[in-house]
Image (cartoon, rainbow, N blue to C red; front, side, top):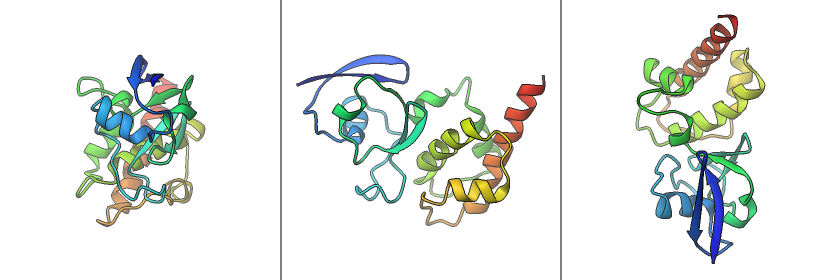
Length: 158
């Protein structure tokens, strides 16, 4: 069945069943590998994408549920030439060890920073609490999100 989606500001037409998990369509059909398969039950966050600005777990969202929505993957946040402030901060702060959780952490942080451009450390930790990182990079991740928030604030003042 043909499903039309808006992914990373591009209209795409996919030949998938309406109940196909969005994660599968993104990775298998569109070859977008930022979102990862982790747990498959929306518990770890590695599959997170933004849907209309909200972080959602794409492993449990059927493609039919996001028709008409704006979907943004890690690849759509920025590019190598013009990275998103979060991507820049994650690199600067070396906020990844194995990198498996990075997609979910960045996407959750992006949704959070859209609403709160001047967060406290406690607010950042709370916003990322549903995303699992087994490498223990939490402190560097929080530092990266704080760094990105500072860059947002500096951008507003210039």
